[in-house]
Length: 202
View 1: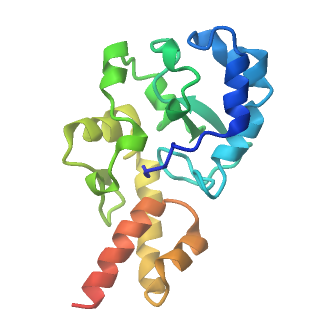
View 2: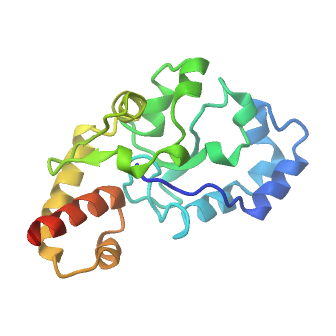
View 3: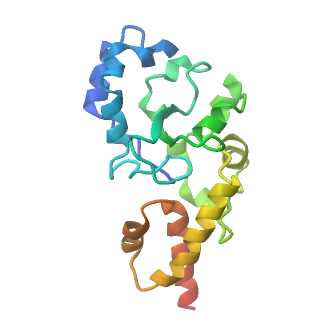
């Protein structure tokens, strides 16, 4: 789960929102003005400057074809956030973690409000183990990781574990070069790569 800057809202989306007659209703997402830019929005959100072709939650590699735009705080409980750009994230389509798992978790409106927004989470509050597991000392973030998004699903843990094992072969690379080689799970790579560098120099 990586920190992404949501301060830059694409102009085409802002203009589309202005055309929606009832923007704070859950049905606003189905308005023709939004439907017309939905594909363009997903492409924009997956760009290198935004989510870098990664799921916003688990950081697996995704494309426009195998992803969807997720309302972090779901439309049915918080319709007033339907068109809030800070509430929109591109998620993978996995059944057992990320957006689909969140939407099946039965969260109440209040529980959704209490969840920390991804754009507000400090990457220092999330830790990755060499075993592939992710955790946090912050109780709200812990709940988000484990119970809401299920980011320690066995398939994700195994994928991260296998990737992190490969980092020892990249000790002579810069972090940017390592990113270019893998292109996914960048938070885990960044944290564990820097730790390995530190251990190698002590």
